Image 1 (spheres, rainbow, N blue to C red):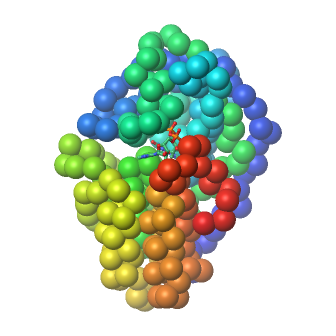
Image 2 (image 1 turned 90 degrees about the vertical axis):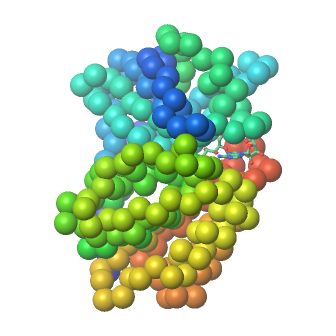
Length: 244
Ligand SMILES: Cc1cc2nc3c(=O)[nH]c(=O)nc-3n(C[C@H](O)[C@H](O)[C@H](O)COP(=O)(O)OP(=O)(O)OC[C@H]3O[C@@H](n4cnc5c(N)ncnc54)[C@H](O)[C@@H]3O)c2cc1C
């Protein structure tokens, strides 16, 4: 069984930051660097750590959306988030208007959970959970082995990622929930976890993640797995605290 570490809990707090850089890292992904004195006491210990990004919508109303802390640098007072661009997204629209120096706030994280300790990792993600998986691979022990499925829109969104030598990455292309579900479920059904101390993590569109969860359950792997809904087709600002 993987060793699951206790989360470190924080006092909820809003941080007032500014946009320090915006960089296209794929066709549908932009990296935004946020900077501010409020980040000088910011820590993050786990790949799934996330903040609520607080941005104005087109009418100037405040909206909040969850984003993974892809990188943080306490001494510089900086954090990076990688944002998937998509039709109808409030954050996508904000990003199209955003300029260096614009004010932006974050809330959280509420807690920080280090990557469970295992010999072997099976990770499954669509583009929204790619930042978490990218960070997880950087935080694995160097001797770790694993199989990783990353479902992105096309080959222009396949990123160069650091990972231990024993971890292999398989890229697949899909954008619709049905398409993501199909490749993720086939992967979850066939991935080999025998005779190894394995941790399974999956994140992405809700319907796809339900199918992955059901497949892992059928294989008796749910007790070593964490399956997470990150967005739901047709739902604005999906609340990931809802049961999957
Ligand atoms: C813990 C956690 C961490 C997350 N980390 C990241 C991250 O690092 N990077 C990231 O990009 N996202 C991440 N997400 C997902 C992100 O919070 C959602 O995709 C969110 O809905 C985006 O807000 P929005 O303003 O773009 O769209 P919304 O206003 O919420 O939604 C508008 C419409 O777009 C649809 N939609 C939402 N997301 C997508 C999508 N990716 N592709 C296509 N249609 C979509 C919705 O179903 C809705 O119909 C994370 C979610 C969670 C729960």
